Image (cartoon, rainbow, N blue to C red; front, side):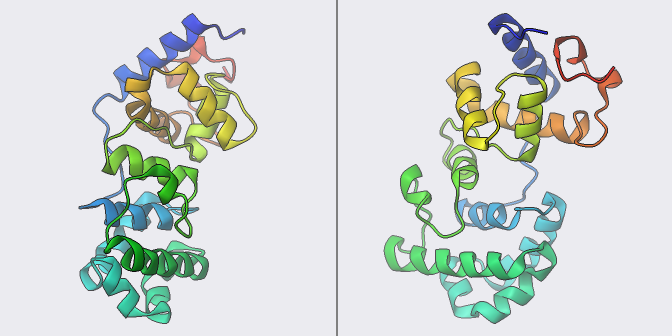
Length: 210
């Protein structure tokens, strides 16, 4: 199947209709909590992250309090999230940077976000989009998989997929479409066994396994 501009527009329209009321799965109260939650979410489910952050933020609700906690205590608080030693190291370094350079606040500038330890394009895009309500598309494993299966934005790296999605999707829909693609990957377009028979996009999908 050759995926034309018109087919891509249909794909986006259907995704928008399916998931128009979806919200981020991570629970947070402010940009700082979102930033830490996204760092913790690497190779970890949002459900587990929400359990961990609920516990962590009761004890340390801001950058300074996490710095005061110390690395060893932080590792113990987040050890059920996986890769906890590396995540704790990055979170501690990021919190120290926020305290030293930004009065404990998360900077809104995308390029500055990328300078924080443990913050890559995905994390910076999520924070930019959700916390600061600016158009951005974050490419996680779900977005990467769905974009490639649909040929909506094929690419062999997250950056190529991100760039392709930015071309295929109108800018005013970038942030919303990020959530549509995530939820589609979770609910129907699953990694091991996609539910193609239940998917309203199956006739528009070159990766359909029917």
